[in-house]
Image 1 (tube, helix red, strand yellow):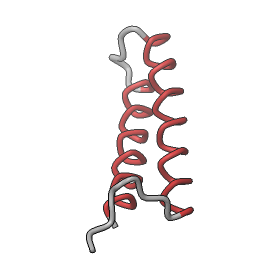
Image 2 (cartoon, rainbow, N blue to C red):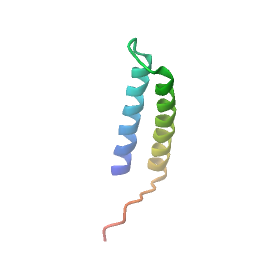
Image 3 (cartoon, one colour):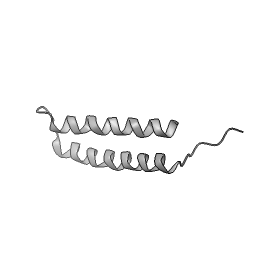
Image 4 (tube, rainbow, N blue to C red):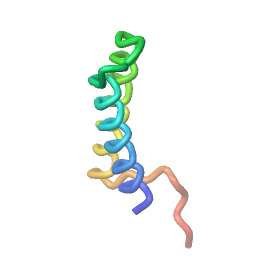
Length: 61
């Protein structure tokens, strides 16, 4: 469940970055595009991990 929350948060951050880039007051647009690309890759990877069910946390037995 924690991994799915991480995926949802990364998607929300990605959406906020897209809004920041296209806002009329966005400064350093090129840097924001690089940041957007990194956030997209990170969000995609988190969604893939959540879909695959991979958990890096030790199991509590």
